[in-house]
Image 1: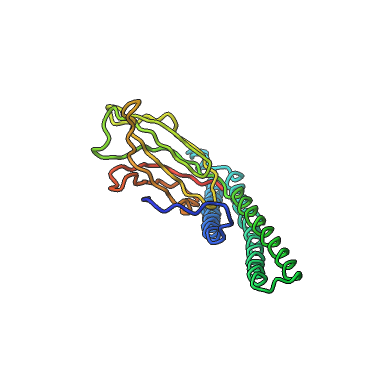
Image 2 (image 1 turned 60 degrees about the horizontal axis):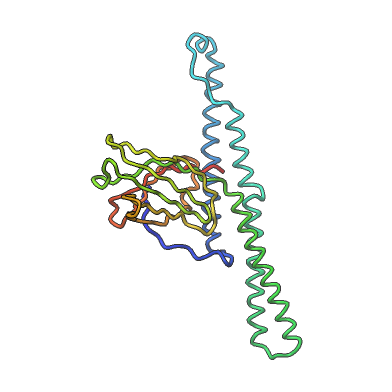
Length: 267
């Protein structure tokens, strides 16, 4: 998968219902794929066990590689089903939609009372409508945060920079990844053999509703002379996938420097 620059999302001072719709759709699709992958694994395992029992004499004569324990696969399926069928995701989203409709209704009431005559009753009704609007807004923000706690983790592995003739032996780089308040800063150098040595190779990010992953790569030439190779913001919605994904991120505008990452989502 290739990533290029993208526009940053709006700040998270107010609920982001349109964005949450996108996140929910991506998350639910990922959970369903997660369940299907492990169901296929369980079916294959069950078939292997039945064949082993059927050919028990052959198995004793020619030992086969041990199979994956059923309990591990079964627990993965149960875990996925809980995310799809229980309130962890779907009921949270339904509750969010209810608060959204209530907030939209309160917003219309505020507009209506604002345009009404300044009677005491109108002022009291406006005050109540404003109070309701604030409460529904707070509930939506709270539900967005609660959904984030149910979105699993992104495990990211550093696979190195690719720059064709851009990377030379002895070059040193710093990579800074920001995802909301989460930060991963790592430094590496290019060896004579073109192998890259990094002081950190893995990091775990908590998925967020309204943030993009920001990546900045800097070449460390000397203590007082650092050159920014480029920076980019990456969408994370496509990473809700049951299988590890290898990503090639274009760091500069020409795409001559890429950052290679491997991302595994665990629900």
